[in-house]
Length: 612
Image (tube, rainbow, N blue to C red):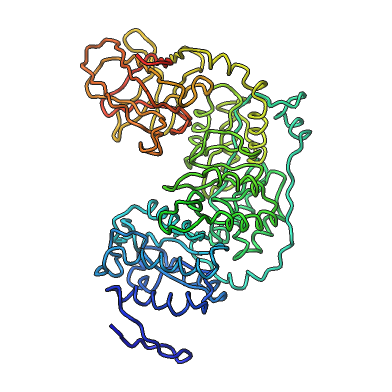
């Protein structure tokens, strides 16, 4: 249906065809047709910022969160601003009569038009973030409702997925610290060609007691802090003065995860931090590299776009920024609901991030094409004593072990307090290092298995492992937030106690890595439990079944156990035909007992090769 749209005098009137049943989307599709596809707008620079709907929903957040001030950078580049829902199964609150999914389809059209303008050979910078307190989520607060069906975090991850499939990345000005002014001015700050940083030498690590006189790792549990989340120029703009003026900065090794692409909008902040860094201020790339996306969706198949691989464009983009800021470690690859890195993705990171990556969907630790890899341990609670306790509980098993913990916007004084608490709780058994050092230790560890794991051949030859509270750690329980076990005395035996809780808790276990490799036949798991109280419990194990939850990491065993309250110790058995046991569950565990009933008491766990 042809309609006339009034256009400012500097542009001629144009005819717009109404095709969506949505006034909002017809306007955006006119923009795509007239400006993005024709090259009249700069498709390389976009902004996801609130539109005028803020005028009706401003009570949902503090006044500056309108993010109107953030638009100047995109406008200065002749870029494109948008505000669209990411979900296909809902009508957005700002246009409730819209056919469900119209916003999301328009977003895909916009990104495809941008992709075509750069011929798929460049990345697309998208500043801003999902306005989750105002629109597109089920968030409620301050007497307001965002009006959507989905939780805020899955909405963020959905948005990241869509961007990733079109070679676009976030400069994620998220609500809370979303307002930024004058980026169009800051962008002109003259940066040096290179900002080098120091990497510890073997001699320095020996002097610090991390390496012995023979050059080998001193057996301890090594921990590094991922100091995040600095994947948004607006967040760095707000937080950098507070962090760099903290008197405790420099007292503990900190790995500052500043995404290097933030230098596009806040170059003076990036340079200022580097020029005032202490020896304990180490810099790594933040979320996924030079921009927040899901790298697993850079390679085919790409579900939202069907496009060919965008990995070469991403590698070129990251290489430029890593070289300027002398980065060789990617502190956290965010996978969200997307796939983890495949072979091609790991190969690319090994070229531009050769000193290592930490990721979500990856083996516990290893080396790929010379690049050390590690799985992120998790997020720390805000209480320093609780954070130290969480670290200490997971530092179990034969040393050395390696862990990276993530925290968000915590100041150096908090990390110093965590270090003091760790010293008090664990003493010399745990050592805090920077991420560059930690990943170097992982490479050393995996390069010399004959030195660090001489018992591997013995474990590989064993037929059975046994775990009990009084035995050494060959098969041991793992304490995590949703599995807070304790050691108890019941019915004449020492045992592990998992308290009843809603939602249910889990009793996690880890198995010595050398005992079993995926595909080497079935396993039999036997659990000696106290038949007390009522209810049922079951087993979830790390499997090779990619159709099971989290790519097989939490497969349900078909049999569950019903307790009859006899007061006797009994044994439950499961045969696992497709075990993987690659430490992919919480806390690097291999399997867990799921307990929706009363308190669960377990006095022994046996894992045997073979069925029956």
